[in-house]
Length: 310
Image (cartoon, rainbow, N blue to C red; front, side, top):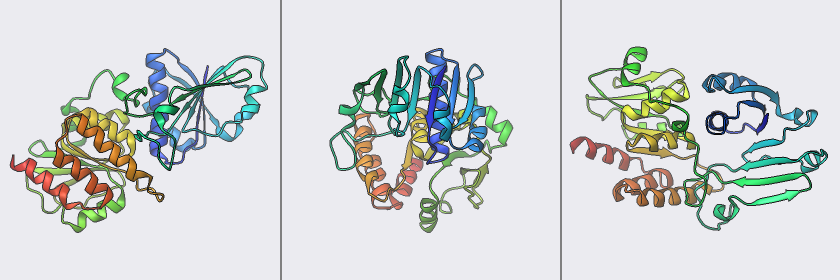
């Protein structure tokens, strides 16, 4: 039995990450029995449909975690504050892995410690051993969680044509961004100024009301990750979707969450440095910065247009 703690703050992103962790441990480590302690049962019921069939998961309320004897292995997502005294009150050894939020900060800076220094460090407390896992694309960390690890295949393009009746005569551009970003894109006539041979695909609550747009229902995690492979461009938000977009090998724009303390600015700079090291062209990397740091969405339209003309 493995316990997993997950405090849902960023709703869909947090729950999707938790599902990825369970599926990865089920597939790679052959662990199948989990107690999932969390605080949003309704959201779990929606996302639990993405669990592997072999994963046996029982849901518990996170606030009641101390009502149960802990398992000898605990996965703690997003650095939830753990009451070590509770875990130390048991006589058997407990191994706890403490996962950070996704991060790209490669150096010491004002908002958090250098994650490479933090990663893989082990501390002991009586019967408790704590190991730190920095979720990141940086070297010397263990990487980010990928659905490709446990999804044996990408859904065929015909699957989407048949199930969602997508237009076969048009190229697809997926749009999954924050409402504020969509509003700014609309101010630049981003959607209306596009050509007839493209269609914008948006998702459930994010409606695009244009003649060259279509809103899809809530997709499964496998459906969404597969769909990005067949789009000409992808606009994504959240780290989970960003990883999916990178794995599709299609050009994409990451609409990062704009944090009040400005923490996203450093993350975007480091993200762009990562893109440069992985052979993304300079103008495209510059547009990522202008999009996220200066809110200049016109540069993205220019990149898309150049793609069309080339």
